[in-house]
Amino acid sequence: MAELMGIAPAGAIGVKLSTPRRGCSGLAYSVDYVTEANPIDEKIETPGGLFFIDAASVLYLIGSTMDWQEDDFAAGFVFDNPNATGSCGCGESFTV
Image (cartoon, rainbow, N blue to C red):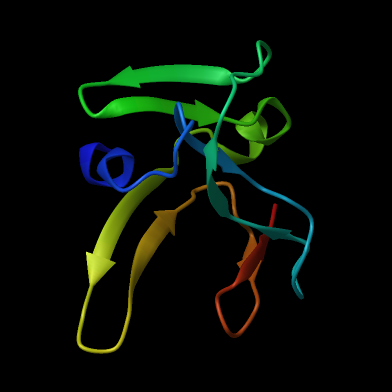
């Protein structure tokens, strides 16, 4: 979080995780900067900054873990979601 907030655009107060509808399987993970808090979102205060979880996405994410991984070909967040019952071949979206 500290690294993300260190490179955040002006006015960003934190990072928000949501699961918008898109992709082959129906839902995708989206991590974006936010400039204002939505009072119905879950708010987690970390030493590096504020992390929000979209209120409509909470039930899809219970028990999930999120980690940053880098290798020779890619860098990005990797999600382990015990609620996901399937995913598309490219790994971009999932279904619950």
